[in-house]
Length: 421
Image (cartoon, rainbow, N blue to C red; front, side, top):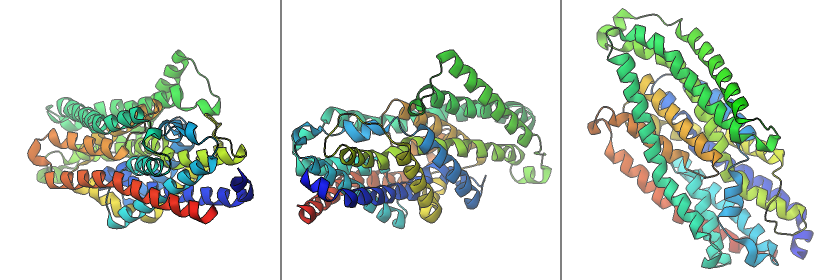
């Protein structure tokens, strides 16, 4: 208690800096998951991707990022054994932010698409084992999170596979694919607006004190979906058939229709990513701020200030705008050859799964979901369409992330404890 009172301002400044550093790492690394498929398919440029992501990552983090934060903050470790020593939890959360941020910086510099969720969960577990003991870990919650790491890519892959097969059935395999694409495209764009808005309104805005009934939520989501579909139809209607391009690639004109549709899925994916992955950075930050504001009391629950969500969104935008391009290429170009239609399916599927998962409070990995979605799109053309060596390398990077985060967090914890004790 005395240490917290003595260094209150110092700890607060450190928490803000480390939290911003961690969310910067999220933006720098996971932007590949949100934007890599759009850029890899050639539908949008890197600059357009950064602008779209900057806007919708921030909006997702600020509007819908509060729900999943509780799991990262309170669900992984049991702080009851250190109630009388709150400085241990404070040092641990600071160490976890610094450890995860450091690993994400290294991975981003190398262009490795690692999981930010793995990074922070591994860091928190590593600190807790070193500082408190094995009994402090909520192994049941860790088991649920580990299960989600397996389920996530499967769900992402299945959703993307089904979407890809439906587009093949209703568009590519018809007598006049271009005309079919113009007819069905607004329906798919409607799904983008409907899914994202429904789930966000239904469970994602509790911290903004907006309480809509189920029928009202569906009505608002339908209206929003229709508005998005209308905007999509306006863009799609301008696309003209290109007979010269069709000579080289039979479906070139059809793919041109999916290019403007990618603007909507890119925005949806950025929103979904911001709403889910902001928790990885602001969860430990919220725990530190709670301890400081309560004068050293380890509270079981606390109000999440909007300024913390604001900080998280800012950090993500800074990260993706300064170093996101390094990782963006990996998922967008190396797993399987992406066209606008394939990338559309992958992003719509991934965005839907991420937002649904974030509303349940489960900190799933966006990396896992989108990789699964891209693989699912590739499988629609057969196993040979996937580069299994790239998949293997990505999986190895996932496995390495957990122990690295844990070891770094333990080292930083003992360093901070030695500095202030």
